[in-house]
Structures are given as structure tokens and as C-alpha cells.
Length: 360
Image (cartoon, rainbow, N blue to C red; front, top):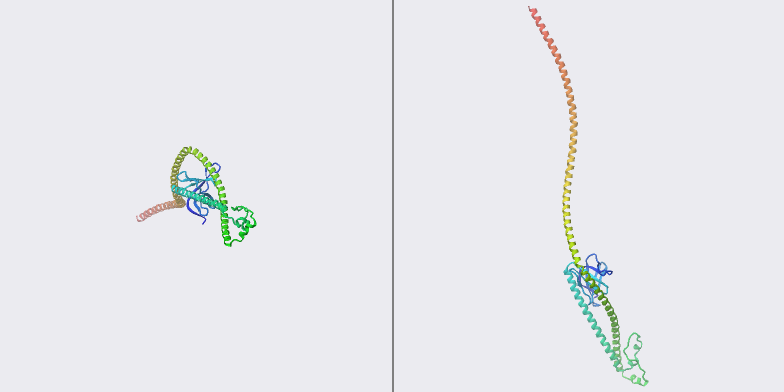
């Protein structure tokens, strides 16, 4: 069936700086999926995480691994095969606890699988010794002495647990050649079984040799990991002495953050006030434009009225001149009438005297 995911969560992934062995280096810009996988063919558990198409975690769980919770939302473990330390930052403490529980569960499963594998190898090695002893104690037959055609063609790499052939007089071969066919078939079947056991034991021996080499390599890796962890513990003890300074710096940073938040709030209030002032200024600008237009219309009307006033003044002045000329003409006429009236009066008086003189 291959590898199957059995548990998944999301976290920020970090690796220890390979140069300083102190600082954490983020391997993902954001939270990614971290999954436990089980390989049924090899009976192993692995932790795998991908950032896009890049594998940022590929760690096989071994019984010697330990997942350490360093804070409420951060945990780490060391991988000697990858020669690094992985760190995971979770969004909540609950996710961290679930991941740690699964780590312990699969670590125990890996330990049991390793023990079963060791027991199986021990059981495999025990029959090999018994089979080798049985081969030495088996009765001699023509096939076991001289070997069959298949045995004589066996390659040198395949070990044989049969006794060395020895020369026999030709007289000893006659009884075997005249033996019954049933006995020959019996010994041929037993020889085939021995050959099968021999092949199985050879494969088990080769597998055991490979496992011994692998265990030696793992032991060397575990020793290196132990030394590295010892150095890491020493570094952490040094770092723990700096925790007080870090806490005081954290307090100062929190105070600075609070001050910045209050300043930001006041700036936001000032920004709102400025927005209101800008809106008021826009209203004033609209009113100003309206008043300016009204003023322009008023000035145009004033200019029209002034032109009409000048025209009226000119007409009034002309009327006054005409009236003055009329008055002068009227005076002249009155003077003429006065002269005529005076003349008529004198004429009346002369007529009257004449009338009186004629009557007397």
C-alpha cells in the first residue's frame, strides 16, 4: 500500500542554523501542513512537510528521538540522520499537545517494530545453526558424497554446509547403484529440502551482515547525536542565564507597543478631525464659489445701473438746459407782454381822454 498519511496539522517550520547551532532559521514563509506518514512495506513512521514542491521536513522517527516542548506553542526534535534540529511553531497549545502525543505514540510503535525485527532475526539465526549441525549428522549417500550435477555447478559465493567429498573405492559404489529407486527418491527429496534451507540461511546471513553494518552506522550516528545534544544542553544552560534580560526586554517592548498603540489611536483621532475639517473646507469652498458668482452678477448689475444713471444724468442735464432756455423765452415773452399791456393802457387812457374831450 506504500506510505499513507495518518495525522496532519499546520505549523510554521524552523531548522537550527547549521553554522551557529543556536539560532532558528525559518524554512517556510507561512504555516504549512506537517503530516505523519506510515510506510507499511518498511514498517517505519516519518514526519513530512512540503512547501510547494520542496520537502522542508523528511524525518524518520526512531526510538531514540524525543520531542521537546520549549514553550506553549513551540516544540522541537533532533534528527541525527538529517544532522539537524527541527522546530515547529503552532497556532495554539492544543495543536502542540496533539502533535506531541502522536510523536510519542509513533515513537513507541517504532520501538516495538524494531524489537520485533530483532526477534525475527534471532529466530532466523537459530535455525541456521541447527540446520548446519543436522547436515553434518545426516547419513552419507552417493549424492551427499559425490554431489549432484546442480551442486557441482553452484557458484562459489553460495556457502555449502555439506561435508567435503572423499574418495571411495569403486567396490563401495556398486551397492548404491543397485539400491531401490524409492530410497534414491527419498534422499533426493531430503537433499532438495537441505538445498532450500541452505539458500534461506545464506539470505538470512547476508541480511544479518547488512543489518549489523546498519546498526553500527546508527550507533555511530547516535553517539554523534548524544555529543551534539550534550553541547546543545550546555548552550541552553548559557541561554537560560539570558532569560531575565530577555524578559526585561520583552516588558520594555510591550510598553513601547502600548505607547505606539496609544499614539496611533491619537493620530487616528486627529486624522478623523482633519477629515471633518477638510469636509467643512469643501463646504466653505462651495459657498465661496456661490458668493463669488453672486458678487460677479451684482457687479455686472451695478455696471448696468451706473450706465443707466449716467444716461439719466445726461438726460436730466439736457432737460435742465431746455427748461432754462424755456424760462428765458418766457421772461422775454412776459417783458413783451408787459410792454404791450403798458402801451394798451396808455392807448386806453388816450382814447378815454379823447372821448371825454369830444363829449364836452
